[in-house]
Amino acid sequence: MKRKLLKSIVCYYDKDRSGVIPAGEILEVTSIIIDGKVRVHWSGCKEGMGFVMVDQKELESGSELA
Image 1 (cartoon, rainbow, N blue to C red):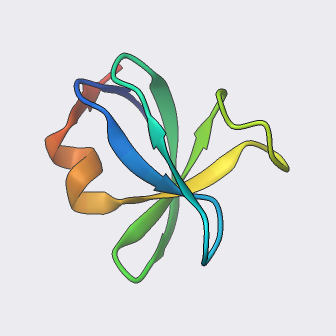
Image 2 (cartoon, rainbow, N blue to C red):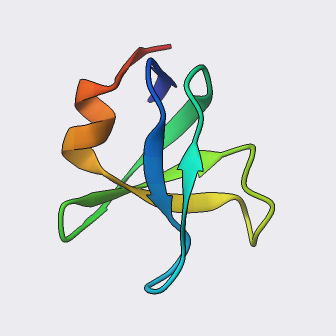
């Protein structure tokens, strides 16, 4: 499923590092959920395969289906 961000949200690269995904970006949401965070593919991520974790509630409240 793809979602378009209506507002910026925090993303987590790993346990100690985070960043911000700006509004307007399209994210591909996966089915992997760990501790309330869902794994998404974001083309703006230049690490690994481009996957980051985002808070599931924040994603749902700050985005719409793309």
